[in-house]
Figure 1 (cartoon, rainbow, N blue to C red):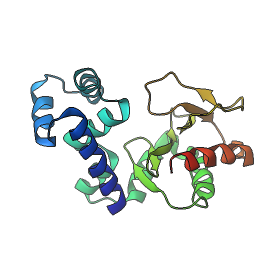
Figure 2: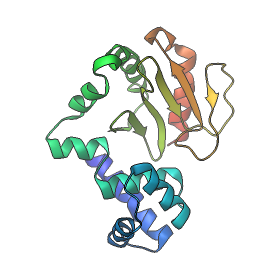
Figure 3: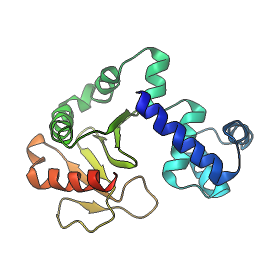
Figure 4: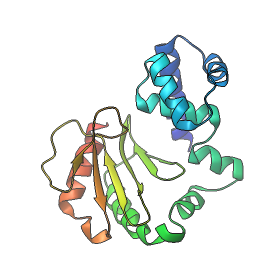
Length: 191
């Protein structure tokens, strides 16, 4: 987690440079903005300071201490505990999809794993993938990849989101060599 803490600290430093405000000043502004929900605060930060979705989202998590890593630390939980919570109840059957993807991605090289409340973010210098249950019946793999992807399973996402593409999955059998090759392209591009 030290690498993830360093990555978040770097991102916060970049946000401070972009906005000309310290973290303390940004925290005070958020406290005074009248917004209380994560999405409202994120939107307000994007509108007020011109931050992108990812920066506004991270800043919101840091200020609210609401990301999975912070929540886990506060509760004394491990990354595995967070994963067990993500894949519990009606979403438990999706864990094999996660495990098959992670088994392949772990072979790519070094990267950071940042568990959030409902998904896992994977990053090198930049985030290259997000994975986790989208609904009780559907798993979603999000990919950050600038080039065009020629696979009918891979759906382009409108600009402004956390990823450029999503891949809905319902079974670990759908995780094949072609999909892993696309994930590897995202990994390489984040590098």
